[in-house]
Image 1 (cartoon, rainbow, N blue to C red):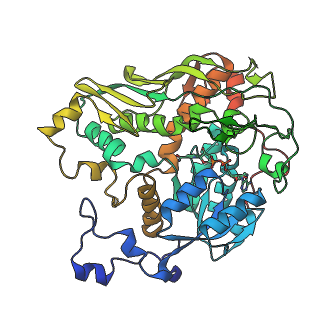
Image 2 (cartoon, helix red, strand yellow):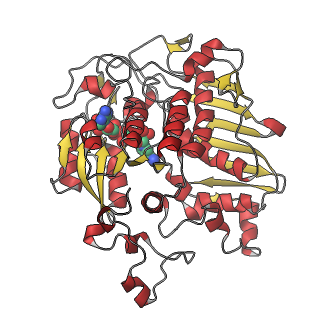
Length: 464
Ligand SMILES: NC(=O)c1ccc[n+]([C@@H]2O[C@H](COP(=O)([O-])OP(=O)(O)OC[C@H]3O[C@@H](n4cnc5c(N)ncnc54)[C@H](O)[C@@H]3O)[C@@H](O)[C@H]2O)c1
């Protein structure tokens, strides 16, 4: 985002100063609300992918942004989003590259399925845009290498949508406790990730009107569209309710390794990120030595590839141990508690989206954290909003000030690489040893071949 553009995000407004109002929780000098207070200061945003999470994200950031352009390969979804979030006034495209060409748009939100993240993110950086991209940032480890290189070369501000990094009352507070030594030396972290579904065989179906299936697939292999929805069933109030549809497209793409890493990256991007942040705050280099354990898939895998092609294929159950130098361990397991357990030699805490608990938390009553402890782990960036809204505020503030956002691509990839290695180990059914300096699996060519995926012809990344 260029500072000169329509005075966007100007410094603290005279009115706010005159009123003596100091709105930040930790008394930071100004708020994003001040910075975007004039109508002309609002951010013109280009949206790529107008599905379920885009609705939540744009809803959270609407105080500061106007969606002026929408790209979606499903015309019906784009039209619905336009009516709901832009009063029907946004320009709608089927090809996101039309948005990247526009000189009046500096800020992009990428909310496409995972296999469609890296290409638009790299091309948007090269086009001079700042980007808020949904997690997981990439489908592969090599895509992460590319994004990190291009980010360094272009200096663009890129926030990954791991909003737990901006959840101050739970996750960031837990990190502050780690940083303040309330747990002692951290020797084990556990990321518990909720259960994942399987499906029956899903029949090939007609592509719905308005959906460009070829472009939805994009860089992924060309396959048939699949869809099945059972008949309506009565809910507890006796009303007819349609069950969740099974498909290889909208939302359900998560359960196909072709487009996602399943729960390991879907929620791993959140909870492994928290576990990794705790280790990093404790001085642990995020350079795993090995990742191994067990995974159950709903289909048979041969040479790392699913044998059956007509149903969900990502792991439904898993238990992985990640070994780090010095004997530190990270455990990644599917479990219903869906949160992060951080264990140190002075105590342990559990943190999730609903609670922060453990003896060291109880002890805060008598020995509270220093006033600036949370601000310090949040890199002293403004904190006037929590969770998703706070994550957007962080992105927009950093785009204005050219600071690194709280979920930058470099720290995100250090955590996500662990999830990707677990995915490779799951698909191959064996432990992978990792050389973090070389970014290579040690002595396993089959695993190394899974660090990247070929892009389908016509959907390669355009490097300019
Ligand atoms: N941060 C969070 O808590 C959170 C929560 C849910 C989803 N997500 C992430 O958000 C992303 C999207 O998930 P979702 O549940 O909204 O999926 P979705 O299927 O509901 O929406 C994705 C949209 O992208 C569109 N699309 C696909 N290819 C496109 C292309 N080339 N150009 C433009 N549009 C394209 C689809 O047509 C669809 O409308 C995923 O990566 C997911 O992991 C994050």
